[in-house]
Image 1 (cartoon, rainbow, N blue to C red):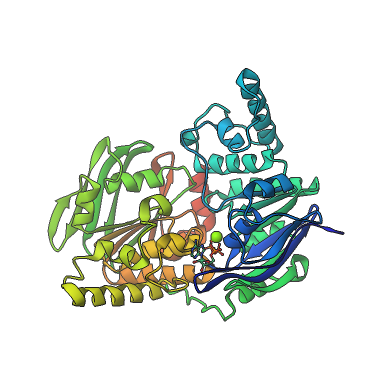
Image 2 (cartoon, rainbow, N blue to C red; image 1 turned 90 degrees about the vertical axis):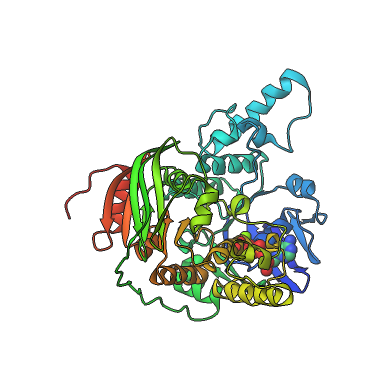
Length: 500
Ligand SMILES: Nc1ncnc2c1ncn2[C@@H]1O[C@H](COP(=O)(O)OP(=O)(O)OP(=O)(O)O)[C@@H](O)[C@H]1O
Ligand SMILES: [Mg+2]
């Protein structure tokens, strides 16, 4: 069968780095192609070239036999290529309908236009089977619904090929299931799909073919039915993954560092918790359960309605009333929304990493400059930044690598308490293991760790104790010995835990 979309010998370099190095992919009608690779492998860059948002140095994009013009987003859309970006790209202050039609609204004026617009938006939502008020503002929607509106926007353009760049990163298992069956349905009706994910099981459930990229190069194209997840992972990393020896820490926690009592805030209903020095406390639950709201209220990043938070460091207890006071007292925070909250995208990696660490680096002039470099260099290597070039702007790094920069920034400080919200979302398997190791190391050195994660294996791997949050309250607390996926899930979803 003939390819619907074909990318031929695509190459793209940024400075000296070949982000995409002579890669060719093609999809037939109704085919689902996975594109996998470690952070920085070139997946998003290749997709942006297909969508006409990035300009290739060489190579062609061909749709139904015709070469489409380079770096012409409109031509790509008209030719039938729709991209759902890795980072959400909706306008929060506009409505669902306006966002779906963004950039492709019908041009007739007045009432007809509004009506026509709503019809198109409604049809797109129906096509993907999602019901949401067309007049609701995006800012009022959950992350999952926003993701589905993004997809509706791509589908509204009636694409021949729908490209999704890590669409499940912030979805719950149930929402992921829904998305995968929806994509299967679209493919059954003849739409071609290109699917990017770090979650290999999803690739095996959904895709027909898988292309593996490493450092911009195409390693192979495999028939999913004839390969195994381990083979795919081995080719992605190109080396044997260090099997984490499931280093269960023999935790002997110290004094109480964080004490939060009776916290009430938007989405948080009277929660109290403590974290001791050297202890890792995990917050489990479904996306939207109130965990991000809870940790933000605790560290003063968002207002509290009620409750008291104290931090005890070196025998001194301080009240945390604002984010500023929290940071001053020794709190580190790796937020969920790294692009907006965690990073200065136009600053270099070195600047970002040393920003919260000025005190530790006290020195002056030339000596300071050198110290900063060594410090930033060391940390970026430890978190597995690729490439580890500390003078590059943070914004030039791939999604997963940006996450590593935010983590590096706080690791260097050895904070008294570190709060990590979905620390490895969008991070590849190799780097994930590395980040887990670093978090445990921090705890072993006496830092109190509070981690929010929707990734169950991660939560079970890291946490000494897990509090499960649902609807803004703690519905259960499990020790490391008691915790397993089933118990956490049933507490999270509100079902009875049957006696094991
Ligand atoms: N605008 C840019 N300027 C400079 N370098 C860039 C730019 N965009 C991407 N790169 C580099 O190109 C390479 C590929 O990045 P890309 O975003 O395509 O990776 P990815 O496979 O999507 O990774 P991830 O899984 O982290 O999303 C990386 O080395 C990245 O740093
Ligand atoms: Mg990417």
